[in-house]
Length: 262
Length: 351
Image 1 (cartoon, helix red, strand yellow):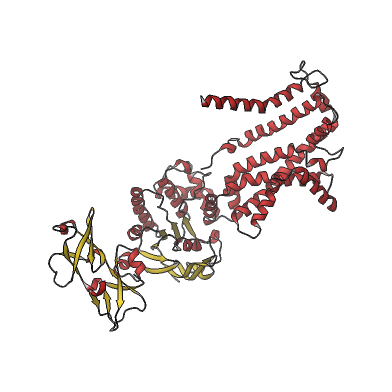
Image 2: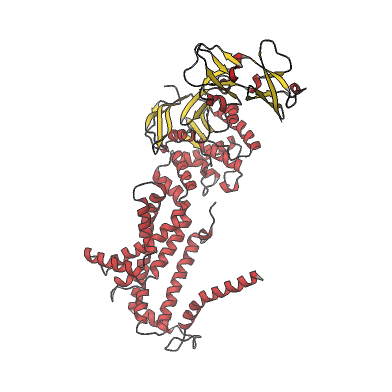
């Protein structure tokens, strides 16, 4: 009785979560010049229109490049930071951890305004590097949060065993530490990539007419027009996100996300 | 210089609290040494200093004559069997065992050969392809041992390696470990809090308490001649008696029931040590022994023997009796506790 109720509620929640995606992708296929669901007829014309528009293509490229670069930089910074925080006791350790995590609780609009102010002072504005710096700041916590819990005492004793067997610190990192934090690193990197891929609030401060990301372009577009183009752009955004996950699954196996460590 | 391990004046503090104080220890080639003591006595801290995971504030550690005090763990010619085994879970058994040789620059085929030999030695031939998670606790323990000895270290450190095994398996592994040690001739430094384990396995016991070494010696020697009250209490069972120093230089125990005319006794507080098996319980006095009137207050049967609690002058002493000696004994019965003054030792320390 109760379990049946739970099933119904769970199912309703899933439908509520999934339905917008269905509506969006459905509406992107409509032949009408306005958003319509269920779609009137089926056409890929809106996708064609979007891909025929160089500004959309360029925005997609910028978004992709930005998300990939930001994720790589965030991983390269977050992993050493996580090791420092988990393994060493030093002055300001707590402060460092909280500072690096703070973008999770700060509104990105506030952060964006602050970064713009700071960026203006040092001449780092409205350029790809300016976007990159901002994205690294907001996505680093995802990697840090996923990696930190994996640097356990048990993990530390593995590193000690490695040193005991004659491995230098860097060898230990690549042969023992990295394989052990892999699942956290991959899941953190996926969240980081997606957080960058969908970000509007922060990017908007540093984008220009020529240099813009897909979510910002969408955001600007819907302020003036609502037509199936935005559904097509959104549809493509979702497809890219899904593609990232599928590719990762093929490359390293998504079981690392749910894998319960011993 | 011939010692495999020579520790001199080693001290270590944790946040102002002394963890090790003035440790002096020499281990010879092929010796099996047990580092014994209660938890928190500093035995694991000492082991971690030797392995290089902790840096001492003072003192030196020499391995085969070489000062390694400031060397990182990966440059010390010793290996460790960790308490939780610390097997690499993402590597097969063979990869775990071959890890050390590979890091030392041993060629691949030679590593494979040594790995096979080491696994054979610990009785795990043919297990190379398994993952550690697919092994039982006892098997994991053997892999940890194989992974350490495959490097042919000068000294092997073992940090309570048997504590996770059940009693029966532990007994079995104790014997095997001793055999392997004997065959390889490597010095073993074995941390344990289990006095029985230390007594069965070790050539010598290093007894530690509160960051200091209380006594070093063969198990039977420490038992027969404990240097301190702690040593008497920790190794085996002991009756610890309050000692009163008299004006004439003699000592009174059991409220004056025993008087010892000791000439050159140590200074400070003393404790009388009397082992339970050194008390004979009889109805009639035994010739050559001092007979103390006592009352039986409890009899506990422990299989091979019985432990009898005796009330003597307001103090309770434990005596160990063979079952045959129990005839006619019952709780509340007045008896005689016969002791030899030679069995009564005075050691430093407050009872």
